[in-house]
Length: 533
Image (cartoon, rainbow, N blue to C red; front, side, top):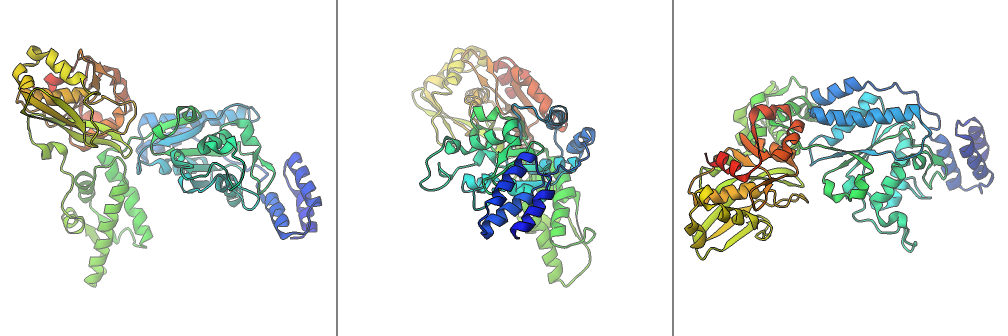
């Protein structure tokens, strides 16, 4: 494209006056290089004129999030809160300055973060571009340089409009392998000392949004109408100051019945389309899907389920081909064993049996809520007590209040002093990854210890959540929703939890209220009585 063509296009361009002036200066200084002409031509091609978009119907979006994506009412409310406020800011004060928080969906793999972003884009009638932040090697790949555009402006150019949904995945993992400067030998800039902070600074300030600058195009571009949605797997990896720039919505996972519906209505049809198989040509019975969910997976999301379902579908197609048949195939529960093996998940309460000194304990890891076992054992000794977790950490000091509480309440707990004086005791607890949740297995640890010393088994369908003080008062726990979902997957029917966490029950899926009896308590003794009754 020659200078004359560029001049004609510039004269007709709807670019703002300041941008047009900058582009005219660049046109006048062109030295005939193809690179300069290409960069100027691509800058002219940017969607400078706003696209007319129908305004969103938030009621319909809220309903679809709950009915089609199986989010809780609270999550749907939080998502709509962000979108309604954003819409109000855009329509009532489009030129205002100040902070603009980014929507951030947080949860382990497979819980629907990307699907929610796609649903929002569809309901808003906007195209969506996805950027995997954890796969970028440098800030230049995101923000651009003189040789090539960055991912952000590249998405705008590719989609051809200035109002899009930009999905930035894995914001908690951004910059893990990035250098501190964008090119070798470049002076280290404060802008790049924290890659995530640089990204948030560029996208959460209204003024910076309106003058976003990619060095490749070398003119400011208004990103104020771009809806930025970020995702993260593990919130503790984002520093608190940076979390303040985010509207955080946490997704703990699905209940089993919702996983069955997702497999039937979404996962299976998607893979049949991928394999070019008609839906009438292969069906999967609901009881087979339910067996895959309940007997083969223990995840909060559906990633593992998707892999197992793929195995089953492929094997069914292969067997039909080997038989030389073309009839429709129906996969039933009896077909699973020969394809994916014997069930791997039978429920902790079934595997454990009713053994004194054992009870369930729920923790939160990067993969989501996990239901593990707490085991207390004794051997002849001199009263030594050791407390370890499954990762090998010595927690004796952290949980010292547990044996202190038992020793101080021997009569009330019907525990013999001899069991503490003439025997050594080991307690094994599940390991947790959640900062701030230290000591949250205190109630469950005390139950296991008393169960052993009274030689009385705890209810195998019982779980205690929460920490404790030396005087037996219960302490608030973190990650309650993820722990309760893990309990449901493990067959727990009764849960005691601190009364301070009673409000957390409002955020758990409605089916769990029918499946589990929740018992708020104030004192550890109340939990022990429920577990050992």
